[in-house]
Length: 490
Image (cartoon, rainbow, N blue to C red; front, top):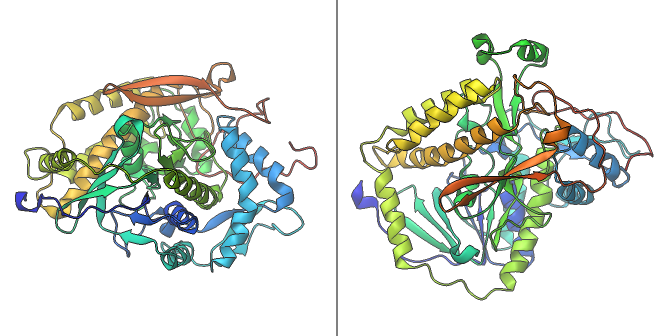
């Protein structure tokens, strides 16, 4: 494979580089282009490959203008008060207008759940069933973005975000069709690569949902938050059975359920900024909005709301910057060396590595976590990290080999965070700590890489309007909407 590992030559230099072509990435690209930025969207997938937006059921939060306060309450109470309420404020402020705007972009959505113009919360749904329903959102967004000059680079996998001195300079990637290294200089980068439910051996997400952007941002200096909070689909009638299990857990329950959605991710503020200047994040790759659980339909609304915010803010940031410095030849050479370590070495094949990682995370860090299972998961993951990384036997395996390395990084952080949080809240379950602990754990665990080591801090949850926690909901998957509280809502 060595003959494939070379620089592609010309450097691409957009103002704004968007990583990911799902709902958040496309909405970000559209907004950045509207603001006058030159925009390049990079995706490891081909145009016909499904991402989480495409394969989604198609439901989005329906919120009339008069219901913003009620939506705020429901998002916060569902999230167990771990939410960054500044993000929730931005979400409920923009949701009504962003949903109305979709019709102007050619997106069809039907109102469901009895929601109507009288002021009820609920959902709208893109028509269609099956694993391509979300095309009703992504196709119109892509068409609108392309009409404004947004360019697309597909089957190209980003391997590093460059941020010398804590300021974004671009990214490096590999073209999966021929193995060529691609240099992407940019004034601003938006991470919109989705979550990482494929870390788990059981998931309802499509292949490739491997936490790429979360790992890339972490390695570039960004903070992560709420990494222990992952939503698992689990049959509700079996939830009492799950919590009746103590230690060790019942192996029979490992055959049901699936990892569904990452609630944690890259730590952002209400302008989608990260700790790294010029690096933004939106959609499932970002954490903090939902806390420990979320309402059904809010994930797709999140992509539209914060995708637009990220695009607007990244374009404004790029407009204030001169052209980024050229990417040094030694950085390109380092990317080639990284790919050489991925290709044709003596390490395990990526399929076997991914299967082992998935079994560890599902069996010991999934629906039935205890101190004992998490300790075992941490030890096995440490052993995997100490060995040779997964290596590809041929070019088609390169993508999965790189995905495995991203997944291993994020799995390590999930397990570490899960060991710290000794309670159950929302979709985070510790069977040895089955109740919420508001005295200690109304707090977020924040991770940052410091001199090559994982470091964490525990921060009080950011509360702006709702400061007295209600009874915490504990359950599986996406929660239904709460009964309306009436005019006394915040």
